[in-house]
Length: 295
Image (cartoon, rainbow, N blue to C red; front, side, top):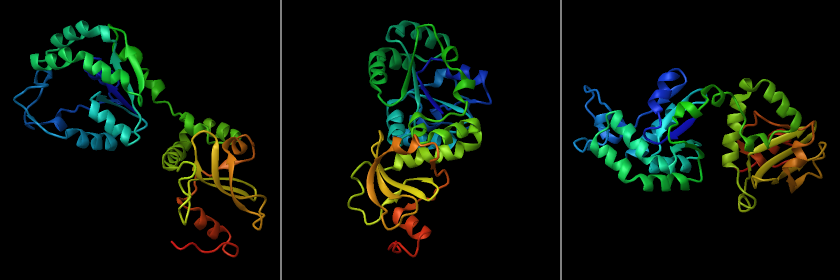
């Protein structure tokens, strides 16, 4: 989990309060060429004598990806280009920043914790610009702090790190299977993560029309009934190949609603379905009926 927090909201304090669960993932080692033998303080931030690394955001995001996990909170700065790169990578984050009217309070915070004048100038003179960008962010979940609030006042670390199923993934899981999954959620975390990845990959309606082989993104089954899905509009409409009650002669491509599957208690979504084409899946299961795919 990632929390992208504005400077001065209390990232360091939250990390100290929960040292095993919260990491203050500072960007200075990626942003500047630093002396490994020197200990840097708040006063060194935005120091014009430090050698700035152009394009540091890309390496920083790569490091974020390597260090992020479901059982820890990674605290990062709310830097504009870092957030844009996370969005491009489909990496979710919570955005935490102060109300616009808190400008003078944050100026006092920066001075009290020992930030340099160049640092204070960047954040205080550019305050409205920073707030504009943060308020316009349409990707992250927003937490806006009252003037005298800190991260530790609004972030329930234990609750945030509880295993959960994202709403868009919950929607994919048939009702009875969902209840069983929730009862032992920690045991199904890899399955949930797999569904999240597949959902991100899933083509929209019409996007596989020109393909010789169709990606089998999801597989729903009940007895001898199989639904292999290659397209989904992220609302309800799906497209794929359907075999009803093992009737191969009348099996066909078609459109159907996600709710037609998830509202039937007996249906399951295949948590362990291998990434392959629909054609390959059909041939593997019924080699005497379906042609071997070219790939």
